Image (cartoon, rainbow, N blue to C red; front, side):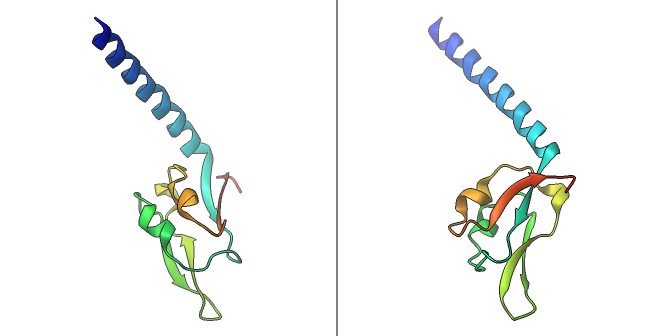
Length: 94
């Protein structure tokens, strides 16, 4: 009986977390702070949705941009991977 309770609890937790993740994805999107980005590509490796892309800047500096904002789920994986505080969550309307 205890295993059924544990399984039901885990399933409920997964459903609740996915609901809030979907709600956040509709309202938030990643924004790249160009001055902080060093082009290390850590965020590109962590982004499972391929929303970010590396580009060459005007002064031959490579940096990341949000190429596909519709693919961004605001999961924060890229923010956690960035060691230079070059990424932040902002409202989609901005």
